[in-house]
Amino acid sequence: MSKRDYVNEKMAVAVSCLCGYSTFKRRLEDATISALIQLEDDYLTGELAEDLKYILDLTKRSLFDGKIQVEPNELERRELVDKMLHVLLETTRLKAKEEFRLGIE
Image 1 (cartoon, rainbow, N blue to C red):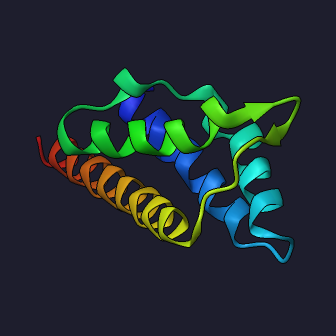
Image 2: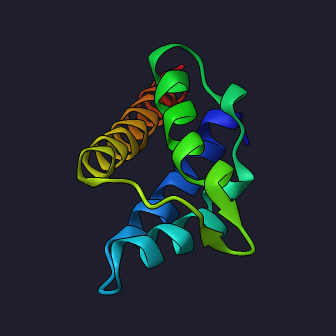
């Protein structure tokens, strides 16, 4: 599995965790522990790498003993969710494009 596909898989899990009914902080902790903690900045390139770095800076680098130490403010939350969805959608699109190309050859 490529690093891009691995990010796609983990981002899908993380986004799913954010869709729960608990507090945002608790859902973010779940997303981080379940998926984001396993990712590194260099798994993607370009704009997606910048988005991934932002995501990891707000999540896994703020995690201590399973708890997010500094809860993102409202603006950071929106930016975080936007970037997570962008990474998920773009990696899904790239994966589908590659699978389609490989299926034709």
